[in-house]
Length: 329
Image (tube, rainbow, N blue to C red; front, side, top):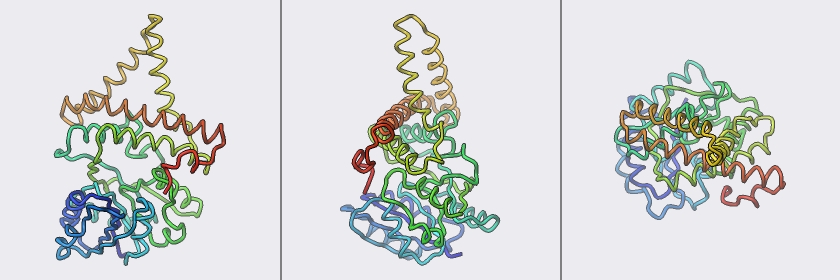
């Protein structure tokens, strides 16, 4: 197999530098790197040039059309027959590519996903958000780790896709977020298999603050009922969990006024578990405390977005692109 890394970039030259540095330090350099500049004003072109002697690298510039279309653009122009798709805010451990190659040689699959982790150098907020996005005690798992491995839905920040599967599926759609589960389901319908490669983890820097994190998870929530309307056979009751949890918080607060304290005590115990687990994993009480905030934002943002989308898409029968134009390119 010939491999090409496909990396869409939008106004993030410093992130690109860190990612390319980690790519240049791989134990196996048998791959091509394709940087797709998605209409950036602050481009990564000069950064890319500094790595031209270390990596086989192709730099492409196009008009802004979103991450899904940019990945498709790069895959159409890449020389490899197997693509590894990364977000620009990822940093790779030195054995990442070696682990991917070994896993595919042992058990070939046309589409895979990998987990994410945090580096010690990340900010406390980044670590807290990473915990909320990956923890068993939130909605994370290992970015879908609760799924069966043969039905794992790879996330496009760390994803592999064969050229054959790309050409057969036409790649990513124009919804964002939600383009990665959409692609996974379309691949399943065509008979392709997906899996999780646990050793193919990346350090996901998550270039976000609280406000941006809320916007991100709110969009995730809005996208899910749209995907359920497209593929009803793949919807799950668990997708309701953040919304139910959000309503549970409201119920617990109302019960306090009636001097019924059990629901609020259960919530307190839950968030104490979150804080303790994050504190132990991150070896920081500060990160453990911030993880409570991250988890609250995650449930509130996703749950609110899901409920709003369910009402508009399922009950009011609105067209997704009309109901939520911000999710489509």
